[in-house]
Length: 399
Image (tube, rainbow, N blue to C red; front, side, top):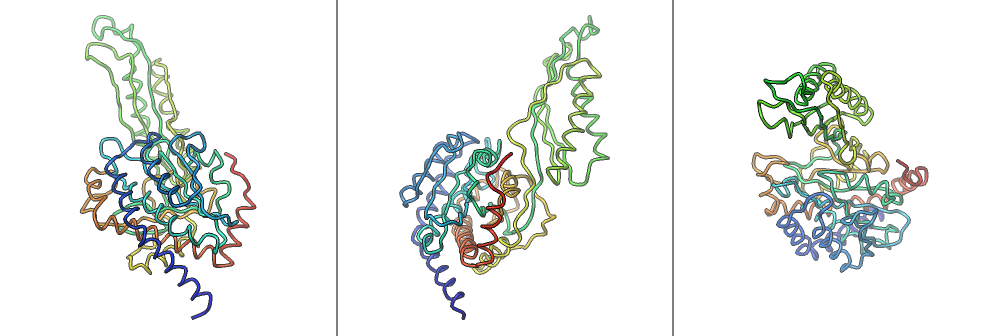
């Protein structure tokens, strides 16, 4: 065994020892987050729990960063190579942590705790980023704009899932609130005096349905009408809908948005109703995982005995604001699996599996695999210098 390999093995075991010593704390954190779900930008108790734990462990904590009350940063060490570990902790309306963010967040805390005592020896700064509002809004995009990632040379997190994998991408997404305002009238006595907002919505939906034949592969347009009128004998004066547009890349998303917007404008033009179209939250970019960092994570996770799929980067699932980070910072976003029956994320059934012994093992293994990955980045000269060179070349983030 070479000296470098022996040193890496020693560092890995030191990180593992920290995880074993801290496991009760991080698993309690995961269960607390799960039992007390909070929605996007409202995760006050969740953010406080994580920040308090980090502060008690000796991290330098700054709360409310980037003008976000539920965002924070916690740093340990002072090395030039800054490793960013993103903690998610928001939940879904009505179904709680059905996307497993209690596992995600606790695993990131595990990784940060494991690395902190080694930071000075490794010449790194461990930066735990508390990132709110992944499910809705995009807190990581806000934090990118606010400069929280400007010093980060590599970013990582793991995400709860039915199976371990690394390397897959995600779809870019934008969300809209759509509304039409027309003029009410009696549907039988004076229909000619009305401007039918429901007809405007119908025409837009038909136009979108017709456009689907020409959409690029991978594009998805989905929506639901939230208000369509009040009575059958009244020409509807107002209608409203929520719509999502998804595409393979951010560039293709912009093209899709333009065409779908034209469909909604067609509804207004045909009926005389007034269109209001509002972007909700931030647009999410497609996820572009760093292949070299991904290989390090794959090796680390397999060394822990996990059955990890090396996914085709062309494989895409869902959308995440970690995609925006990945366009700026070398990033990985592996999936950390545990038994969840025959259900998947965003299903109410998924929620109840979030505190099982397998989910707890995912917290510890995911955190340790990230810590070992960070060790590789810090101790391999090519990795380290490459990341620092990329950081210097990009400079501060500009939207």
